[in-house]
Structures are given as structure tokens and as C-alpha cells.
Image (cartoon, rainbow, N blue to C red; front, side, top):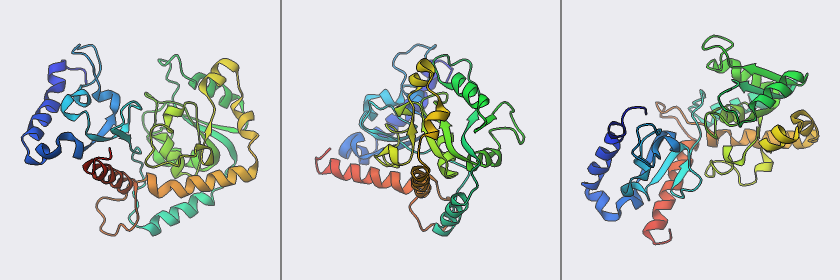
Length: 295
């Protein structure tokens, strides 16, 4: 991503040239093709040939402007791009595996009102993280898991440690990561922990294929400006939610689990629709509509 722009763009240009030679491409061009990218859209949307600018310009190539792209984080202004869930460490084989996991997190003892697992990110000046660290650290009802260590039991790279934090909490704070989204959102859902967002672009405008349209059913939104500029208390906001509403929201989160996890690709026993199935079915439906001239 930091080489010269010509070197960074080389593979993308090779791909486009190869596709253009295929007879399948000539039928509808990019309108009936789709691509999966394992990074965020911002890594593929460089606008100028300036070495100091980040990423490649693959998704700005005219030949792929209308291609459906499944990507970890999308640009909300591109209708042909759809965000898909970040992979987690849970890759079940069967619906029974999913049900057993759902029962496990449904019965988890949650002794903390809210939790945050993450690092301070001091280089991001206009984020809510400093206030999260301050408020969570000062609260007796918040579990703060600081991801300072690179490895070991106190590292965010230790899935068991992070999941134990999330499984013991009602709400899990999800500020933006290096970009608007973060994988931790899906770790929280997997743990049956209700996500708390600080910007609608962290989930609501992203994962439209996989998450319900009514965000209040399964999550909480506290605008980052309310916390950073108006000193809104995260604890007081969450504590006002009635217990019966918390239980209903948690159950909705737990119901989401099969839609946001990826089944074990090695298994031949998969018998449920996972995040991959949801994504590909949406692509097929989109292509079918385009062939009919509906989109």
C-alpha cells in the first residue's frame, strides 16, 4: 500500500485486462460480476496518482464501477458495494453448533453493565476513545480491557480473553477503529453483548444485508459528539434502559449470530445459512434484477 502508485495498481490493472478478454465479461460487462475484497473500501479508492496517497484505485477503475463488491467496509456513496461481516474465531459446522453456542451466551452471567476492549488510539484526535477510557475507567459498572499487550492473555489477539469480557457484559462499546468499522462489533454479537455505537456509519449504513433495519432492536446509538462535546454519560444512558428491554435486545443479538458468522469452509455438514450465504444470495438477486433491467 506504500509502494509507488504504478506498482500498487499493477495487479488491479492486470485483473481488469484479464476480465475484459473473457466472453462472460462481454455479455454484460461488470454488471453481472462480483468481487470479494478482504480489506476496507478505502484501501482501493485512491483518486490521484500521487505516491503519498494511500491504497490503490482498483474500485475507481471505470471497468469495475458497476461490479458488485463485497467488502469488509464499504463507502456508503457506492450503491454497488456491500459490507460483509468481519470474520470471527467461531466457525461452526452445523446448525446444532450454532444453537449450542447461542444457549451458552444466553445463559452467561453478566456482572458488568458495559465493557470496552481496545487501545487508546492517541493518533486519532477527533474520536470518542479518550472519553470512553475516562468514563469506563471511572465507573464501577464498566469492564475496561486495554489492548496494550501484543500477545498473551491480556492481548486483544487472545480471543478467549476478549470473549470472556464481552460475555460478562450487557453492552459492548464500539467506537470507530482505524476506520469507521471494527471487527469487535461481531465479536460482541457473537458474545450476546449489545453493541453500542457512536456513529451510524459504524454499522447501520454498512451491513445492510446482514443486520435488521431497525437498529434500536439490537443496538444503542450514542452520538460521539454528545459524549465528547456535551459530556453525556455513557453509564447513565445505558442504565436508563429497562431490564426487560435489555433482555429483548440481547435475544435479538443472539438471533443474529448465524447471519454474521462464517461456517467452517472445510466442513461438508454445513446445514444453515451463514454470512457467506446471505451475501451471495443478495448478489445473485441483484444480478437477476439487472438482467431483467430492474437495476
